[in-house]
Amino acid sequence: MEHTPQSATRTVPAPAAGTPRPAQEVLPAFLAVVFTLLGFGLVLVYSASVRTRAPEAADACLQRHTFSLLLGAAIGTTTAFVPPRQWKRMAPALLVLTIALLALVLVPGVGARINGARRWFRVLGFSVQPSELAKLTVPMYVCSRLGGAPQRRDEWRVWLIVLPLALCVVGLVAAEPDLGTAAFLLLITGTALFAAGWPVRDFVLSVGLAAVLAMGLALLRDYQFERLVGFAALWRGRADAPYQLRQALLAIQSGGWWGRGLGCGVLKSSFLPESHNDFVYAVIGEELGTVGLLLVAALWLALYILGLRLFADRRRFSFSVSLGTTLLTALTLQAWLNMAVVTAIVPPKGIPLPLISYGGSSLVCSLAMIGIVIGLARSPDEGEHREHANSAAMC
Image (cartoon, rainbow, N blue to C red; front, side):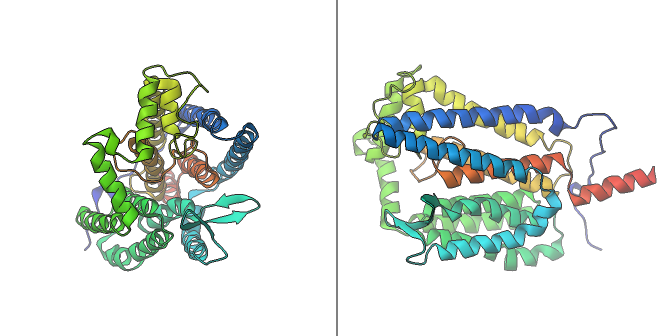
């Protein structure tokens, strides 16, 4: 007779009629934080690009960002109304689609090659990055296979089917090459395994293997090794650090506590590469000061805490809770990693600040994730429907 984990069978009583669920109480505050971050993004993307380019190019940058924001809002609103059981059913097909797109982008003449990497499709003048889609579809597939605290007999499926497919996606992203995103996908996969209730012994083993693989990816190419060496040199003195990191720290230092004022930054003017994209956090530090940096960090912490509270009354290890928790963790972790890179806490890697940085694929996928989180929190998954129905029948 197989032992079923107590946490997997624990149920949370359905709220009494007329009692608002935690999701209904917390959702307005959660959306307010999301809209605030998006507002920061609109203002800062324009401010960071207006002086690094010609004025008309800055306007075009703002228009593209606004278009991506509206598209992402439409997709996020749509995904918020898709029931959890539908996502669970579509997860394998979405993963196969992601693998196909990642393979297709590597084909010469199909994927656009920019700065030595083949990561984008060019569609109607816009760049589409399929690796951003992988940040959504990989955890969705993992949670759909494991949601509900899998039994011991299901472990072989994880080792022989689920993890190999996830590693296939990681390998394709690494081949672009985009080793930072590949390592981040490994981290998200581990988060999904943990949130879905995979046995601790197997989880620790998989995390150890992923750490070894991530280190191998970091040392796979010379420029990645040079980044690590340059980051280590920073601790000997700022003069030895990589140029982009030096400029980011200089921008933050020059901003002081209150900043130079919105739009008055100097380092963004051709001195700080990617100032409107991966290093927009440094522009915040220069123009809004340490107070602005702390405000953005606090907003992301609030978004994560409020997001977890959306699932306060839900059954642990269910598909809804495991996927919702994983997507929230992925978004927040990406934001904190970006802030840590810009402030030289961790080695540099190309990763945008979600909801704020310029970049259509990242913004659209981030808003789609938020929409899915809201949809998962608003409607119980299929298993919870059955549990509540059985409870009502017993009464």
